[in-house]
Image (cartoon, rainbow over all chains, first blue to last red; front, side, top):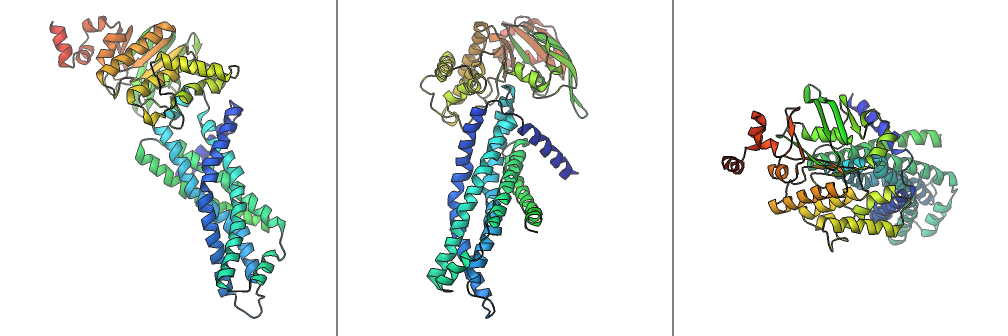
Length: 246
Length: 250
């Protein structure tokens, strides 16, 4: 029952969030600020994780596909496909759900318990739209950029691992990376990323917005935001994969 | 002017407001007093629309606020200013940006320079000097309250609501805030409603006092009349402190 209550409240909140902005100029400015807060400030962690995961995927693939029937370049091919199809859009989104989701929920939750949201309401401002919509739009713009960077850095990590460890010849790895490249795979990754960005920002915004109480409840909201965002990312990953790849 | 007719609000089985009728006049500071749990905060939240009353009507200059659509309410709310108990300044904005914020949101015809001038006028009016570029975390509690007042009056409101404006302040600063609220009310001819349980505020600025007791409007009158109300619950509240008892005996 609690789940249905939350789904209903979430959909009702979305309806108010998506009302026409009261002052488009201020919303635009907020979107730029949020792109910096939610996107650029996540660039470091995305870069580090992508390079290392790319390297690990390459080494793991190389050691586990040591079979005479498999061409050596399959390591590069498998690395590229894993990174584009799954690692960058899904794993990076899960990491962003942790980093950005908790930030959004705690920021809005703190505004709720310190009456800042009430202050917005009394001024006649659509508080949910003003606080959550710019975060959703910013995430949907900046997360695909982060994922594109992650894809490049992941592949670079694999290339670097190959160069440093020499698990396979570098020329074979490069050939595998370029082998039968399909633009649709990138399109698929971008669709997933945009949907996940919407889920992260809106679910985290929802849990922040419904916070009642004090510091303890802000912590609870932050945790719920991360947990539910992650669950919905995994769930929608399955649905989107079924729809887009099958 | 704000008229309240038979206002009722319950939370499940708990009846918090049991039919409140009163009127708050323009240009006067009306105080809502009562013990903790008497329904003051719920009453004020109903007035500003943060809570929906179960029954009753609230009229802002003869316009029924409770029967309005969201869009109509937004129009009335643009004429409201509110000072919250914890000031509720926006953490991410500087003092100056906090005051400009309501102007930015709704005054598309004002130039940037005009908005800045208005913000400086409001900040000067509440005696905030040289703090325009500080963040709320960098200023004292008393200053926060004054900035919150400046923000509340930035859009030239017709109605000003203050929820426990003195809470957490030293007595001297509390008097400064009280006087500021009273002066602004008269200067700009605003309908001001203040939620408080501070008897100093009642005596200093109360043009009209409403005493709530267990969700009922138990007594109302002027700040002079409250000292001789002949009402047991009111007297228990007013003379709860030794100081007031001494004043009474003198």
